[in-house]
Length: 241
Image: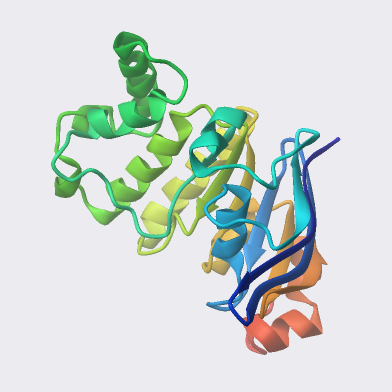
């Protein structure tokens, strides 16, 4: 079953075509990686899916429904959660408060929102820090909090935008395990990442963007051996064994 279908997507900024005729089919339960050079259009695709930017052409279909005209505040309501490249918690508020904000996408009851937030914090390994201020967290914990806020909305589709950036190898390994656990719970994932070890170990398939166009799609092994991908992004020194 096609869970998310992006058909001939176009997004322009004035005279600049940021996304040009992009197509992608995502099946329920998959982890799909999006890679490409900076400025290739990866985050723009996330922004169009979640209604931050409107489509200038094409169509986005989620669970059989056209969501091309969705508004940002409606994304979580239809089952789409996301993180952002730069984690920006409510610095003067507690970690628990930050996650409860996400919980309120599903309930107006504060006790239910708190209960859901506490469950997510325990899953993310942040329960012991629930009373700390968001601004006091390390980079690794801010990344976890960013993910926790998205998970609190109870998404069926989760868009992860460079959640491993700035992490050391041990922290990255822990984050990879968390993403796998999220997927094991039935959440479909689209992930943008520049750390190749991460994207190659997590993804069932990878789509490669260059200048707003998809230049390749396939398994991690197929993509790593594609000459266009090597030339545009990976470099000749990259070999997947």
